[in-house]
Image 1 (cartoon, rainbow, N blue to C red):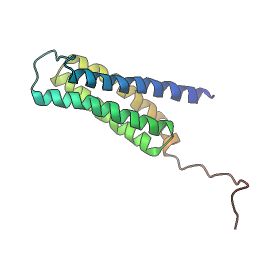
Image 2: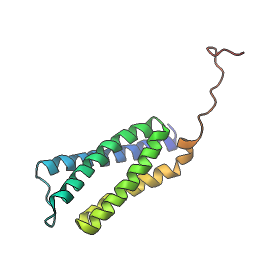
Image 3: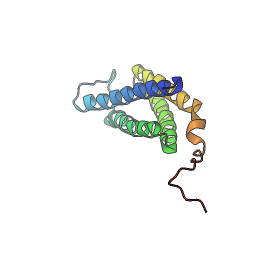
Length: 136
């Protein structure tokens, strides 16, 4: 396995743990195990709670796309990372300071996929001629 492939696997495992943690926080929020530092309106609580579900669920889907080397996995990860950064920035400023910690993994993942963008956005390599291919 090449060093690049090992790095990709490590980043995807890191991202999977991050997204699973987001889903775990969603589950704990529904059970009342998570409390806000300050009283929040029901609307804010719902936005925060269901954003954890969306980020975690959609994140696992886009990770599959990255692993399978799909363009949609790249663009989905970019869009989700940008959303996550904006969501956590909003939550940092208006909900509670601990929300800022979520910006770091999203920024790392965004930076990583942007560094590899040529691998995901390049046209598929021409398939080599094999015995099963017919030539005109």
